[in-house]
Length: 174
Image: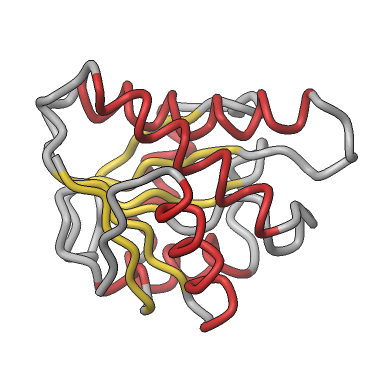
């Protein structure tokens, strides 16, 4: 298994699945969500509307990848940051549920953005530690997932995730 940290655009990822920082209405939006829907085309939204009404915070749902190179999009709903301890539980749940969907759909590689750190205001350093810890814990008991890649758009977020991975051991970055 490998955890990688890369700087780039998640819509170009060639992992089997990419995760989307979705909202609970699954209505598309700005940031990563908007970029994925634009790059993947209308098929993703059509499938979302057909299969799901909403998605609870801390959970995720899955669709096909539309025009993306990734076969699947996992729509993970992270919390709007409030500063309460429940935020970390909900953020960890979004990552964990996404990984559970990978296991259920026999997906061995997935790319994640930094969930909840944009418009939802989650501090990047805290979010990175929750994300890396949650992924590492899941992978320790699920060897069927061979690669989890965090794809970060800007240099500051990239460096923060590198630090979080190094803090948790097994530092790999590209």
